[in-house]
Length: 301
Image: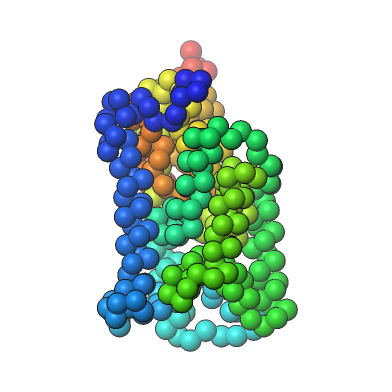
């Protein structure tokens, strides 16, 4: 990225605007469609999905439950119903395949708010940013489980921005506007990607699931990288990019294995040289084997 330039300029020139925003567009469609399914019942009487993002029943057949909510229920000393447990296992299995933080980038409606804040930061040239340790979200995750254990209730869901957005759209925003505005202003003026990238305990939980996920982003053509840094600039968790691009001399494969990766696909979008692609975690094996063979050859020679 040239000084003063915007990430993805080369990609737009190479692939066109739609080609350089395809995963962003698909994410917005996914987020709004999922939200629309939940809202269709209470707002329009079309009950394809009953419930909310914490616990729901799709087509009166498929139960789905947020594993983090179930964990809080257990911490509070209660035993969820069988249907809720089954729904939690289904969701858990899904995110173990596609990546836990896919929830953050493809499902969570708050992500739209934080993405807008990030877009405005770049447009307005806001550079300053408070530093939050990425471990803060894990402390907050532990705190909400502790609160559940002490109070015997799922207290976090009362102020969880995701839950509040849903309740606000159904029953009137009220206090939810304040929560959404606080997240937006936090990301805009206080810290870049502060909420989703450093503070959100929901992201921390799904990031832990993401460590074992099968679907991954990989720098499959990293030899074509020209160090423009567009991927680094656009990534909501930019610390995950570097190992995939700079691991060649250490025998590290190009697959981004960090659970912090949200599989948002923006690095794929903004790269004009098509360095990145979606693969699986097993794509590392062949590259590591090749690196090992090359290393042995160099030593023997």
